[in-house]
Image 1 (tube, rainbow, N blue to C red):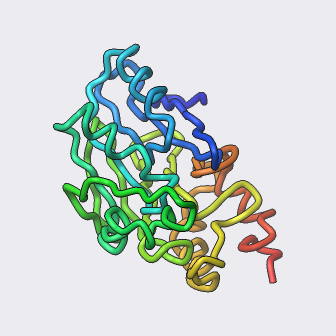
Image 2: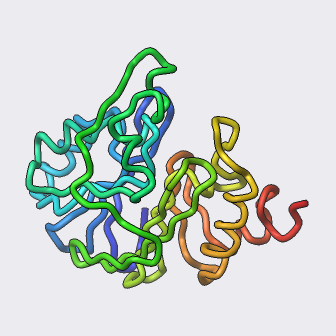
Length: 219
């Protein structure tokens, strides 16, 4: 991934093809891990290979494929705080809620060190991020919008995908999700980049114009 002032490494984990991200400013050693999935060996190897200092673990939401690596990353870097949206905190420690129990592999994460709220601004590893809560895929999913980057980058989890949105058939609410996307993400500049929890990157402008679920031509 090429950005003007950020270095972002994506690590894809089987079996759900989930995207974890290691994010830092170019030339910096302080870094963040976003949604560590099952492939923690690759995440740790990337951190060690670049001699990075992990400043935090960010979860966009508490579904199993996005928190599976929390325990291992936290064990390797105990000083790095774990952050998640306030209304997702229980999913970290409840396998039925985070959907792992249904797959016969109950996952429990360490509890959050810090709970974040809608409209909160956090500063970590030289990155200024605006938190926006966009429920609908999960009860309190958040996105982290890196405001001091060019272009703006949205660490979006499973809220908005290239050509799609997060599934809402597992206790979610599509109308709530659509409202959150249109009112909180589609107000960003068209060139803002969305890094999703699955699949390829996209931009706000592309999704506004073409997304069949929430774009301007959606029903």
